[in-house]
Image 1: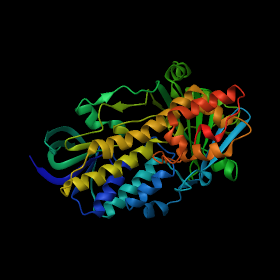
Image 2: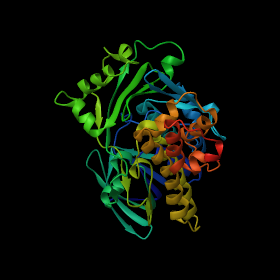
Image 3: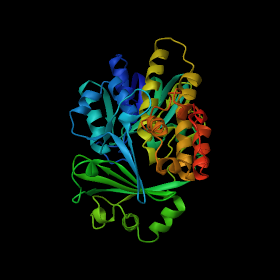
Length: 419
């Protein structure tokens, strides 16, 4: 059997795998990327947050991405009845990027892989990992291409960026239940023929229909818009019934007073996709010879668009640590990778939980707005969830609940509560 030898094997060519490959290519590391799909391919995760721009830049991919006319995203809008809350990333607490993109992932990911291939990165599409054996940090992976040819790859380290494929968690029995309640989504793309001019037509929006039910609207620069409904799984199942995903999404649009006229008679570009109980977790994020990144390790919820951010944050961090390990340095994967990533995951987990309890929605939609609080929350929504100078990061586990309670009970509070 043919056996190839590399320093680092990367499973998956989505954002996490691409930033890992981009970083390592600049370090002249022998890498190989295997990807089960053929690109371009449809995938969810179409709204980015500013923190990812740091990762694309560091991976040497930002320049190539900027040459494409992806829709600029300067913030996000949340709608509940007559109240609209807009978060402007240029008005956030602390430093960091003030904008990012809304992107059709098929095109976006394809741009990244083409740029990596141009730089000489070996990417094997339509190639699946069938089995893996570890001997310390070294591994032998058995792969199969689209023609059915089976071969092996010897690697000194493996980065699993396989996303929803969750290759190593599946092969190594690392999956565990998510700590979040079960939620599901149905989404598709539409030709946005009634798109308004200006910011109204380009602003990403989240229309809250009920506390646990919301519609996403993500306009792209190519004239298409992504539409999705997110709710508790039981609600989605009732909406779907026996009529299928298309009828379920049409019903969801009818529930939106804000968007029903714009999208009521729209045609779906593809049969709406049902993502059921999408939240996922693992028993550990690394082991001897491997690290799990992006959705292969943990996926929370689409409400704050954190998925790609965690994918790129963990992807480039795993690449940096693996490179140091290859050079003979001691790497404490627990402290430098797992604990670090968990701090950010914990912050966003709190925000997701408090969104669905309604506490965070109380802060979003209470009037008059407290601009200081809004700036600190905005920094979290921008992905800067490791900046503990922000009290809404450092005290995430109690500040939202406390402030929501006080607002609902007409109690006054001072900045001392969160400083």
